[in-house]
Every structure is written in structure tokens, then in C-alpha cells.
Image (cartoon, rainbow, N blue to C red; front, side, top):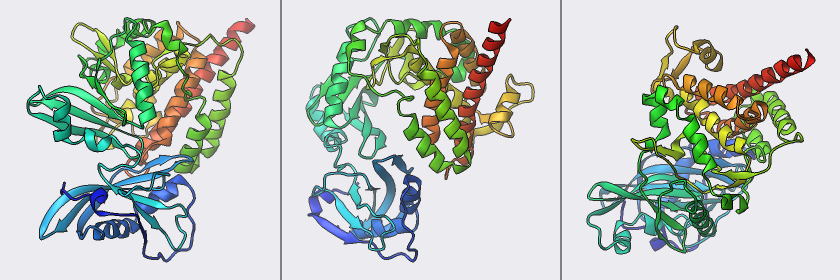
Length: 459
């Protein structure tokens, strides 16, 4: 990245985009995202680069991030030219409300196609993530660990205005993962992590934190549970009991922390976003929402317990001796045990639909080939997870004997709907529809159990 930055070169700026031919006002998140990845993106990028004396060579759009009621952010991978030299940088355009600092350009659309201001900044000067510049600056992080040699910082995840994850390595060997968040959230995560550490559930220790929103944890031992599902599904099937024990080992103090809204609490928001993305399923989505609300609000639910809050295969590490470690403890706190189980089942249930470019046709004799055909016409599945459906079914059958399965599947449906609401309908439309069909599958499975229970009760 060039040494110049928006922060170093810009004061308070307000620029106007070139007028567009249409007079249609876009209002929904999906429409704003489509607008920001259209040809107007070139005007935004050119105007931003021009303030630095740079020229646009080429660009490509990153994935849009739509937050219902908050705004839309789109990143751009940019190749620019200055002084006859080409270099790469990353810009973000966002309609989220952010502090209009000196690092931020503010655009207004005179045609009113997008009515909210469009804020633009250059990575890493995200106005909502004040720690990002330090966290991604290798020289700055060397000062944190002066005893370490050849430190390198690598950005693993960046969600504009929300969060980033940075991997830190010494001589090429990772030793820490940094989370960059809004400062209050970082303080809250530190408190939650320290609370979990009071119990017997293994968690990576915190090795650095600051007041700007950076929290670095030591690298945990083991590989993601998703790897076991992919490469050793028979072993994965047998791990469900260990997963249950690990959840039960969360200390009671976790249940006394502040409660985060569950997926069922936010189902209206997820449903609204999913209906925007896939309007053909709007009626189905309304049915799912009504059904989930009816199930989870029924009397007789168990009391809240200590929960992980984001319990899925990427957030559970398994070592060679089957020791489990929890990571990403942002949402630990009180909740229903079925929220954790529903989260896990929902995520495993969409593994067959990941990465459309890696899809293959399931063999005719594969278990659950007919189910895959219903969920994804053509019986296509991700080549990386040839037997994930077997793992899913085994875990479902285990949990049906341990908890209220109808409540469990209602919560799994809510989590799956949240993933459908964030699907990329432009780049992966078939994956998006497969996720939506899985939502309906959860409801159908639960309703089938309800019918069987009623028949049994009537005998």
C-alpha cells in the first residue's frame, strides 16, 4: 500500500457524484448494495483518488455488507497510479453512520438515488475501528512484543465499520489472533473471556489489549471442527457427546453476564433482509417467522443457562487428543441450550452449499442423495464436505433424545435464516436459495415430529 493515506491527505471533504440518468430512489439495503457495485463505483473511486493526486487504473468490488436499519458497506480492491508507479489499495464506501473524521470523504448524490451520505475511506482508516491502523501496522505491533523476532501482521477478516481479525506471526509461525472492534465491545469481550476462563472449558489466554478496541488472544491448540467433519466424518459423528460436555463445563458465572439477543429474538430483522434478497420466498419467510415465534414463546421452556452464543464448527477447535477449545467468545452469556445446539446444526446444515465453484454432483448411492436433490436441485454439494449430511443427521438424532426437538429445530431455522439473509445472491445465487430451502426443511422436519407426537398422544 502506498505510504499516503486519506487520513494524511484529506481535510473535511464533500464531493458530488456525477449525475445518473435514472430518477428512481433506492431505499432497501439490497438496492443500495446493487447501486454501490454498479458503474457508479468508478465515479466514487475516481473522486476519492483524485483528492490524493492519484489515478485509477482498475478496480473490482468486494462483497457488499448489508446491515438492516444501519446501512450498506462495499469494499473495492483498487489499483492506482501516482508518479508513474502503480500500487494496490482498498477503499470502502458506506452509508452507515460514522464519524466524519479527516480520514473520511463524504459524497452526496445530487440525483437522490441514494439519499443517505456515502462515506469513503482508505484501509486501514476505518472511522468506526480506531485500533485498526495500529493492529495492521507491523512496526507498531513490534513495540508491543519487543522480545519477538520478525513479527508479521496479516489481515484475515475485515468487515467495514464492524470488526477485523488480524493474525500475528513470529518467523512465520502464528502466535496470536487480534480482534479489532468498537472499543466498548472489546472491553465487553475481555470481561466475557475472563469469566469463561474461570471454568474448566479451555480458552486461549489474552496476551494484549488496548483501549482503542484491540484484543489479542494466543493461538489456540487444535484445528477447527469443520476439518474433522470434512476429513474424518465418522470421528465427527462421535464427538457430539464431547461437545455436550464442553458446553456443560461453562462456569455458572457466564449465566450472570449481560444477555445478547438470540437469533430468534432477531428473526424479524433476518426475515426482512432475506425477503429483500429473495422476494420469491417472501411468503415462506413470513410462515417461518410466525412458526418460530409460536414455538419459542410456548410455555414450559427451561431456564437460561451458560451458553457460548456463537457455537458452530469454526469456533470449536479439536486437538489430537480430542481436547476441545472454544474461540470467539463475544456472545457468551445466558441463553437457552438449544440456541447453542441450533447454531451448530444450522451451520453444519449449510456446509454442502458452500463455494459454488467447488460443487460436484453427489453420487446416486450417497446417503441422503434424495435430500440433497430437494435442497439443491441437481443433487449438487460442496466437494469439501462429502459426508456432512451424515454428520448432521447423526447429531440431530442424538439431540432429539436429549432436548425438545421442535424447539431445537425452530432455533436452527432462525440461525439458518440469518445466514440466508446475508447470502450473496449476485455471486452465489444457488447457494442463497439452498440456504433458504434448508430453512424450510428445518420447519418441515419439526412439524413432522409434531404430527407424530400428536398421533402418539391420541393412541
